[in-house]
Length: 162
Image (cartoon, rainbow, N blue to C red):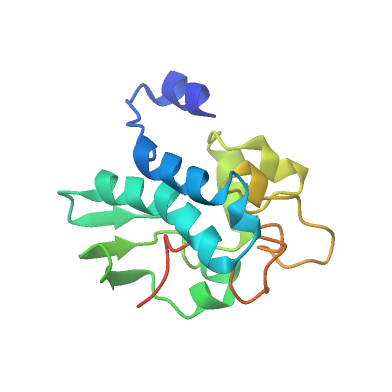
């Protein structure tokens, strides 16, 4: 997806990685799979691998544009398509917030948009490899994320509301 996106749109993509020392300290203290052991450990892992790099990526910006949609979770359903993100101190805009999954698929097809083909293989929500599995027929959209946890705790913190 990364290479195809670069090839088609000819725009640079800036990569933000976890800080090696933070990751190393966590793994040394708790082991490589501590995220399976507790919600707190998983949230720490998400913070180091996702939230902290995102914070650096957003630094100096006033607007954060996302691709989240209301139908993706109960937490998101109660959000607005335009909001103030207290955590990052900026406006957060979700332009496809009110779109259905079918509308997203139709737009992708009609406009030949690059997308992750895991979506075609039962992964409606894609996260880190060990934390994501395909969703079975009849399961909730986010059932494949952190499947070992209580179903009500399905956010990593990127789009948490305060």
